[in-house]
Length: 218
Image (cartoon, rainbow, N blue to C red; front, side, top):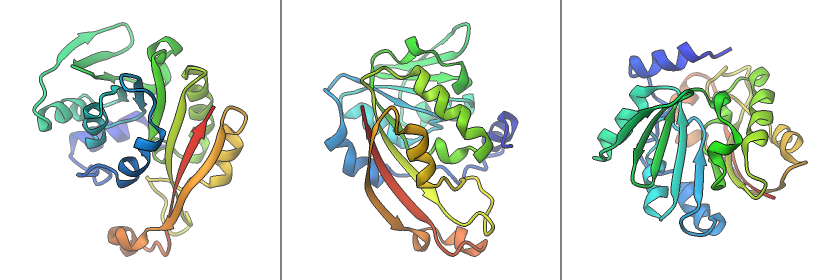
């Protein structure tokens, strides 16, 4: 199990090879087609210091992110030259700057009211950060906190876990369908083998890496 201390240590030690320095190309491609009305809330689970946060905010949306590490959150604001206010609540430390709110704390402490204004979830790297035995709880909690009208843009990875253990972890497409199909209509937007784009993973023995993008609509 990859626990909280694992991720906190990685941020503390700057072992963040999972962080992408540029806006996710799938987000740029599909978000304009799936986005809710301007001004709506967009939720980013396990968001780190993703540059995607600022990109979505600049499109005119209210961004809410949840992240365990205060180092990641403060780095996000510093690297994007954004001032912020920090307020302690009973469950989170809340960092806010204009239309960006990042909650420092545990995803599983989120409640339905925290996301009541959100109309879209962008799960770009949260699901694949969880081991198989941890994911059922994630699916169930996600469904319990989302508004009834909230859709999702989801990116996942699939590979032979005998070749690499993760994180990021392999998430079979069938698992996503099984867990979310009762709440959403699920469409595969694109699927491709991206192993040539990830040479460091080929070096550790990975022979293929399938990346899939899904739209989940109520």
